[in-house]
Image 1 (cartoon, rainbow, N blue to C red):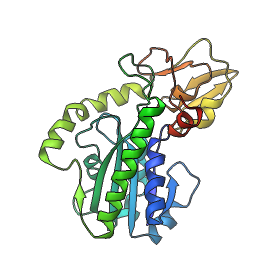
Image 2: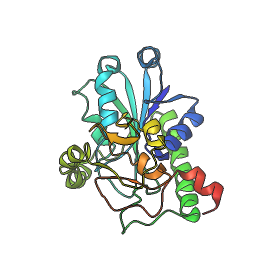
Image 3: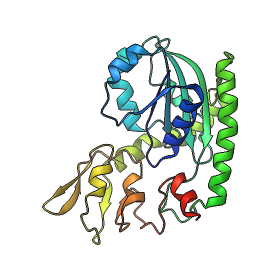
Image 4: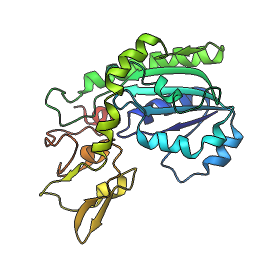
Length: 257
């Protein structure tokens, strides 16, 4: 089995690796310099893991699937969608990337994970106790998921009509937000041009031109740069400066925040 994931700030990476360790699957980020066509030819079953943005699949994952569509034909697909609270049909949205009958969805599940939107006043930073609870629940759910899959039990979270309607509340608005955010990265005056954002951007959207960081209008709204900038000098779409940053579950647990 092959697990392919995109993770903006580490949550989906955690779930992808948790699953892969449990079932002995090969686990690879779609950002990796890897021969994906060779891998897709080798495996009949593939798990895809991604964060939900506005109840929809991130653009970077949609583009990856479109690029490799021919190699995915006839494959059995497992879907894991990570979400902050509730996305309705965040996992089902992945199925919309395919024509009817192109793939066989054998499992779909949502996993609640810590919030990484660090510059919205109503959302508080996840502390150690909260992260430990997310991790505990994720492990319990994954154990059940792996048991289901091993026994051939098919579950499809988010595929009901109710879930689709609820997801549509966010999902119908997301394309316009995503398109605007694509070119709405703001580099604030206290940027020190350390180039960290240039190195870590999954879309290669940021470049250093003569000591000034500029965007190339290709943001996928993953919030990686917002959460990793050492001067908290980057914002995307929401241009409130962050007072805290989410750098992943592991760092919070290590530092005991």
